[in-house]
Length: 120
Image (cartoon, rainbow, N blue to C red; front, side, top):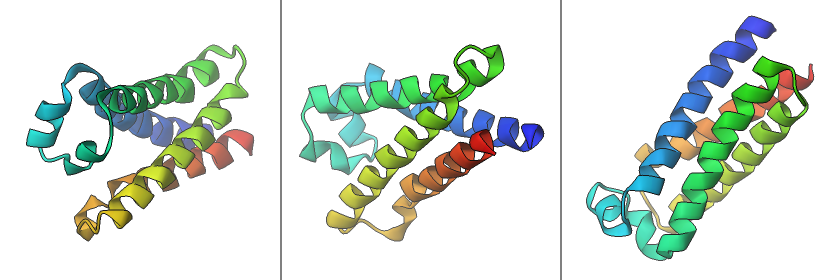
């Protein structure tokens, strides 16, 4: 269980950290130009908040479990990230985007698995 958790947690945290940092450091126009058309539906502050939630969630997946300080926060972070990705999936479906944008759904499944592994 521990090995499986760290493999899934590490890869998922890396994906969320990269995606969140990308949203935090780039302006809305640059994000739209890079192919993230969904940003047109959100304010710049909302985009930064989404990015911050992804970065905090990535840290929450790894740090509490690694340090042993409040390890209950790792499954909480996993569940919160899964809910964030469910919201992202809803946005992509409402925008009638092609199935290639199934990334949020994959990440939500990974985050849900993390929540289960951390509890088990």
